[in-house]
Amino acid sequence: LEQDLQQLLAIKTIIDGRLNALTPIARLPSEILARIFSFAARAEPIPGGYSTSPASKRMGWIKVTHVCHYWREVALAHPALWERVSFSIGPEWTEELLARSKGAPIIV
Image (cartoon, rainbow, N blue to C red; front, side, top):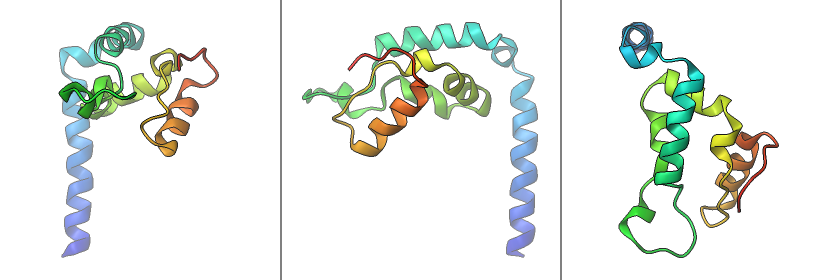
């Protein structure tokens, strides 16, 4: 039964992806969506530094990568979105941000 349930969940994931692909936002070219993300990145950067404001406790603009597979793929494919690197979020995440920037100029 567990194996059947896992197969059903995998099928549901595929169907959800196909339904998401039919939405108007999924028809935007990746370059335009990445540009929109760049505005979000400037407006709500990844938390870091010594701020104690409520905003610093959120994920910043990275939360757009959790909306759907398409948005995640677009964000990961555009190195300029990862230009702001914070060393205060932990070494693992700092390394991840540097890897995602793929050699693009960064702001520390």
